Image 1 (cartoon, rainbow, N blue to C red):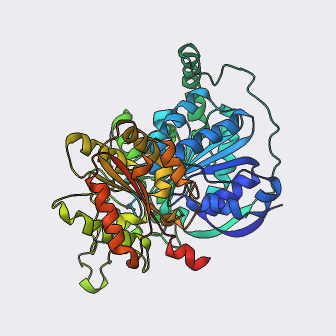
Image 2 (tube, rainbow, N blue to C red):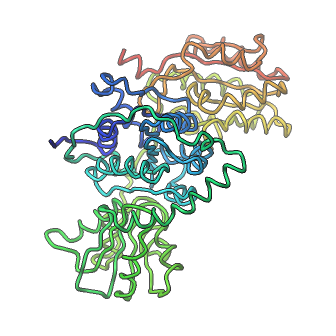
Image 3 (tube, helix red, strand yellow):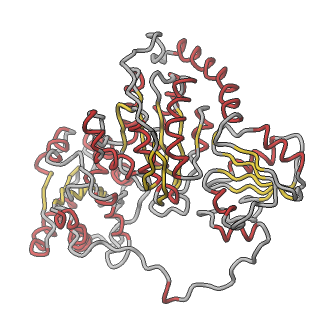
Length: 527
């Protein structure tokens, strides 16, 4: 029996995973994927079934933990934002070689326009690289249905399946028809005890099996209910619309069908047969896709007939950022691009640290302590404290990837920079900073690491930090000299005392770790 509920795209994915009988959901917070696991953590049925739903230390551990559930014959889901897939790339790519036992779904939430990310990479390339199927919903309903389909496809082909969403779909709402839940799979270990042992002899055998499955993946895509060829009388133009982009096309033809033939692509590998037929019929091709020109590049060089292809590569559509209905209208010749610029009064203002944020007090005493070292540039990391790069603080000078503050500062110290300073949050530290600090501790590198401990994963809404209550123990266990591990409380009344303590560590010709501890003001408000 079906009934309808109002869901964010992320919530539709979460509910579908529960309904489809997952045993575990694994994730690290990252916009726009965070709400998937948060929904599962709140869901009564997840509690009743004791579905695993705790945050993982990072995306790599999440992927490996989900792979372990699949190895045991149960269904699992690993969720992350697009750059998190970089962190999980090692187990993700190798999981295509080991194959899956229970259904294994990898949700990658891409962020075109970089609303809260360092880049706008397209996860479709990862699926192609690993040679596994990918599903890309055009609606919240398809997001729900694709979770079911993806887990079934994973078990049929015995490979992981990727579900790719983008910010606009993840964070918008629509009615979704949900299905009656199915029971979990029973425990069932792989019949081949060597399947997951990627010694070269086994890996070569598994890789050959993966290659043989490619034809099955293409056939599944070409027969998929999520792909479609929509007819149109005007063959002067053919349109390929992928995922959510088909909605931007539909918005330009309200109350009527698009006059041009359209191929809707929502399951990959790219279905070649309907695209080949479209190319044979049409003089020109317009490719609408969110993210990189993934399909556009394929159409330009893959098919025997080479029509004029328009899209992100030739300037018909913007090369960067999210698509909009206006972008599509311009590419279709339905309207001219806007000529007006935003007035100064309505321009976006840069984000700021919250009033009362502990990081603000940390940056004040950091800046003052560094006045003795003109031209010094602390290296930082990813979190809400990254806003310290902006006025009025101008306190930090890098943000590359999770954990890079410590390792870049170590490299700078190795190059002769003094003082070499790293700034990292408590959750980012446990995500990817620990191994860098281990390198520095092993060599007693002359550098100072500030760990900004606000007792939460602040930037993504206040999830639990895995370092809570154990940060000093972790740092000491890595081999940092206890004499040069300090805990400071960033408050205005402690400013002079904190400046003095930090100055002493900056002058030390060895590794020091300064933990700046005060709870996030937003978390305190909730409490």
